Every structure is written in C-alpha cells, then in structure tokens.
Image (tube, rainbow, N blue to C red; front, side, top):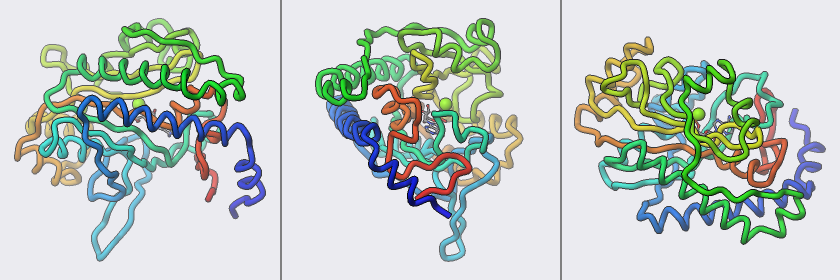
Length: 308
Ligand code: AMP
Ligand code: MG
C-alpha cells in the first residue's frame, strides 16, 4: 500500500517546497538560455516501439495498445537523432522511467521516474556541446544565485560561482586515481565541476560514437558536480552511419531485430550530431544543497518503493 501519511508529511516539508520554487526558476532559466541559442522545444515522447537499451536495466516497462507493444521511455536518444531531420537544434524536458536496482533506494541520487533536459545538435562535435553545457550551467547557476537568493538562504545553501572552462580528465585517469567506482570520490574531491571524457566502449550504450583512430574509446563525456553530488549530465557524439551502428549493436550482443526501426531510419540517413541529457532533479538537488533527491519533486519514486 502507498503510505499516505508519509506522502502528506513530505508535501508539507519546507525544504521540498523551497526546492520546487528553485526548480521552477531553474526550468525557466534553461528555456530562456536555449531559446536564445535558437533551439526548438519538442514535447516529450512517453511510449514508443524503441527506447534507449540501457542494458543495466533488465526490466522493460511495456504497455500494450491495440495489440502493439510500446516501451516506456528510458531516454529519447533515438527520437532526438530522428528529430534533427526536421530541426537543427532541439531540446525536450523528457520524463524517463528506469527500473533502477533496489539497492539504490537510499543513494540520494536515484529515482525511477525523473526528468532530463535532453538536447541534440545537428553536425555538432563533442567540443561544441561541451562548450554549450558549460555556458548553460554557468548561466543557470548565476541566474539562481541572483534570482533565488531568498530560497537559497532559507535552505542554508551557499552556491559557489563557477567560471568555465571546467577541468577535464579522462575516464582512464579517473580510474587510475580513484578506482573503478570513481564517480562519488572524484566528485567529493572537487570544488568545481569537472568533465570526464573518453569512456570505454563496454561501459556505454551502442549509440555513443567511437573515435575513428582509437578503437574501443568513445567521443563522449559526463559532467561531474563538485562537493560529492556525483554525475550531472552524460552525452557525446553519436554514431549515425548504419554500418557502424550495426557493428556496435552486434558488439553489445543485442538482437538487431529489436532496433529494426532505428536501423531503417539510419539507412535513410541520420545527421552526425552530439548532445547530452541533464537530470533536472539532480540539478535541483545540487543547487539547493539537498541530501535526498526525494525532496526535489512531488510524487518522487525511489527504487523499490511504491509511491503516488
Ligand atoms: P544518462 O544518459 O543515463 O546518463 O542520464 C542522463 C542524466 O539523467 C544523468 O546524467 C542524470 O543527471 C540523470 N539521471 C539518470 N538516471 C537517473 C535516476 N535514476 N534518477 C535521477 N536522475 C537520473
Ligand atoms: Mg550517465
């Protein structure tokens, strides 16, 4: 059963209400920035015959309508690539459902339903979207420091000022310094955001682009928050040539039949592109300095917890 008492208690929390007020401003600042950068906003896709494989998540959210099987969106990656046929720069506040492992219930960072700002740019390089990410992040932080100072004071949050360019380290360097499980350790060791570059092919999905001259290494990135808050965004350049996509699907051991529609789209010609997905609840958590991501939205759903 859903614990209604807990739900009502949470809804009366001052911390949660302040965080949602800050979040409202965050969303408005993001839109303002992207519209100025000539992006078009798409409405979210909630069900589709294909979604991000995210092979970590073995359980697939499925709905059947009229005898057709739809999957619930884990990310809009394939729709973003396809949408670039219509517009050169697109973004979406995209709701994602991911059945995260139960042991992440109290990580402070994981929900099973969350929203990401998902964006993609036609003919862009990683360098282009990395620069865009830095400018967007700095714009939003500055806007919040100025426009939500009252809320931040009440939350007891001293939000530092961040000036791009941010530090960059490679995945390999991060593993060498902090070990395989480096995300939180790296984050805790920094007072400024840091870019993590060049993930190995095995730890990412098949759509991130592999360097032409460095087999097994991807032209991708994560932005890591400082102060121990962990990952902020993930992105990179995308594979767009059908033969390369087929090869990457094969390497992952995925049945290509499952992505027949996507392969057909790639055959018809996808643009080269780069983009990223930036979690809104995690951004809210960082900006407000909260321990628990459950305080960043109403009706928060943690792994292995039944909620409204
Ligand atoms: P990903 O493509 O998996 O890196 O997801 C994009 C972004 O969404 C991440 O960088 C996070 O900011 C956010 N995100 C991913 N998974 C979750 C989750 N379970 N709960 C909240 N935010 C998430
Ligand atoms: Mg990620």
